[in-house]
Each structure stands twice: as C-alpha cells, then as structure tokens.
Length: 314
Image (tube, rainbow, N blue to C red; front, side, top):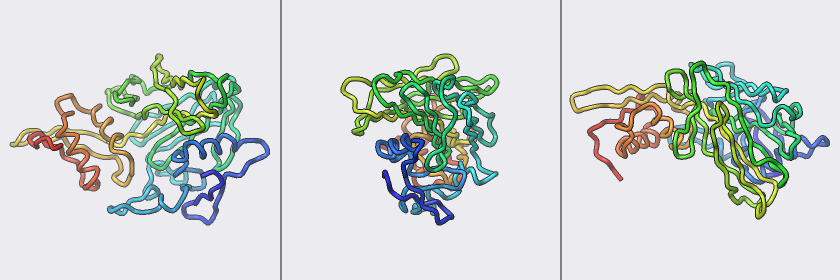
C-alpha cells in the first residue's frame, strides 16, 4: 500500500504516501506497510478516504464502507464525533449521539511534541521515547490510536488514561475486549483486543491491563522482533442502542436495536457488546446464532429478535 494512490470519496483528489521534509509521514508510511488495513478507510476533514475501489463495493444489502458512515468529520450530524487535539496532553474527545463524552489520553503525553500533520491530514505525535502515536478515525465509528515503536529502547508500556462518564467504569469484557461503561453499567464504548505486528508482519506479544482509569497496552518487544513495530488500542463507538427482554407466550424474546444497520463491522463487535446488556441466561449458543443470523442476513430488520425457544444450531 505504500505509494499507492488513495481515493477521496466525493472528490477527484488522489493523495499518496509521499515523504515530507519534516518526516511527519514516516510513521504513516510504516503503518501503511505493516498494517495496511488500518488505512483501508480513513475519516478525514476532507471526507472518507479509501485505499482502493474495493471499499466502495456494495454488499447484497447495498451497503459499503463509505455509505452512511458512523464517523464522518464532514457531516455535522455524524453519529460519532472525535476531536483530535494539537496538544497531546488535552487527550482525544470521543462522543457518540446519546452517550456521554469520553476523553482518551495519549501515551507519554507530558513529553510528546504537539501534533504534526502528515498524509491524509492525520495528526502524528512524536513521543520522544522512541515511539510515535497516530490516531486514525475510521468510518465504522472506530478511533484507532496507532503507535509506531522504532526500536528496542522504546517503552513496552503504553498507558491511555480514560476520562470516564460520571459513575462510569472501565472493565474487562472478555475475549480480549474491554469496555467503557456508563453510570447504568451499559456500554458507552468498546475497546478491541490488543494487537502488535513487527516489520515482517509477525505478531508481537501484547495485552491490555487496567490501572485505575487507564487502559495500558503492554507490548513485549525485544530480541527476535524486527523493527519498527505497530501496535494500537482501537476504541469503537457502540453498535447497539438498547436491548429489551420481552415476555411472549412462547417464552422470552431479546430485542436488540442496532445503532446504524448501514455500518459494516465484524460480528464479534456486536456479540461482545451484546453480552454487556444481558445476563448469562441470554448468552448461550442459540442467542449468538440468532444474533449472527440477523447481522448476516437481515441487518435492516429492526429489532433483531432473539427467541428463547429456538434450538441451538451448530
């Protein structure tokens, strides 16, 4: 993907990963080389930028990555809004309609430089510790806070302080996911499982820890790894607006209301969030199967009803 032209949806511009004298694009070029999926679709101040025509292709429901995105800085009615600061100490404001604002602090912000703006207008922060952080907003409501680790002298610990909603908390949601909960104990945002890749595309051992209101990514890099390394937490807006459990003659029906049925995202993102709304009674295989059936075959049929009397289907 390095050097490949990008498509700015709704315009004729084709920005590419050109080197700049100040080096602001270096980290973005590394991300493009090691983790190109991070730049497949980017929500910029100029519009949604996609890596190639495949991102514009519609699925069987007429959806594409850029159709009715959840996060679009050019749309004042965007469901998810992010404010990426010049000063890294200010943190990134993340706000979804109907939810409280969350502020996500950046690693080593106290000694990092102010934002430099490279390709795609993406902010890059030199952390002055052998690492550079690049927040990447994406159309599906994801804020991918990517850090490029230059060499073995860089830290192995990257802390992201979270300013929680009043009464909220940061919790381990299972299967590598973490969640930011509001005062009612319901998800305000989700954090995808940690990942890190070295220059050869090999996985580097990494995981999250919770330290108070911080989500901390531990990247166990060192001997045997090829540098640079790309690692990140990805904070996602919630995909479920509410869940209701209704009693009907046959038993119980769990009614799941998606935020935006146009959004194309992995099923696991729905499943992990769904489990935060319900007790273990409604987490069995039959509920997962029914949720996936709606996600896969009937995304626009709202609500997604999950029936207690349905059998398990392998």
